Length: 161
Image 1 (cartoon, rainbow, N blue to C red):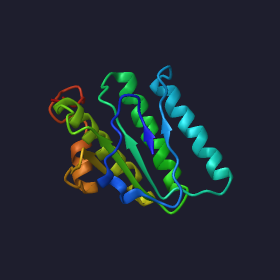
Image 2: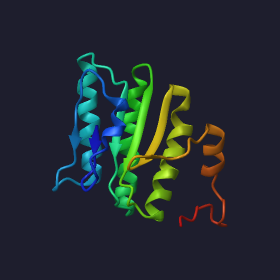
Image 3: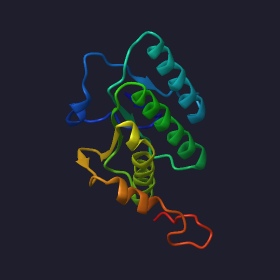
Image 4: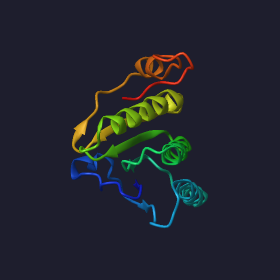
């Protein structure tokens, strides 16, 4: 379980990821999002050096939407997905508070779609939950269509509500 600073602890209903062993990585107050992503990556590398495999992971996301936080969150998700891919694949669950507003929901949905496309060949399933609600499952084809550049803007950037 990976918890960004300011994120809510995932609900009990997200216990589908419970395994024999658990590890929690929590961002410290003085730690930048990029430094947190790097620390989690290093810690996951040491687990694999000891022969531990990862079968599922939860990434509890905060409501931060600034570019540094969004970029580090994407890096963090990819680090965790890569760790899952070193084994036989698995589930990466992104969670956030059910109080997240539209911009935050759109940004996390876009990230989940990107991850679904990027990691599908490595048998990584991605899901997104806000509180106890499960977002509609996105097929890789739907995710590809949603992630195409140029939808809605001339410069190729997507507008987020």
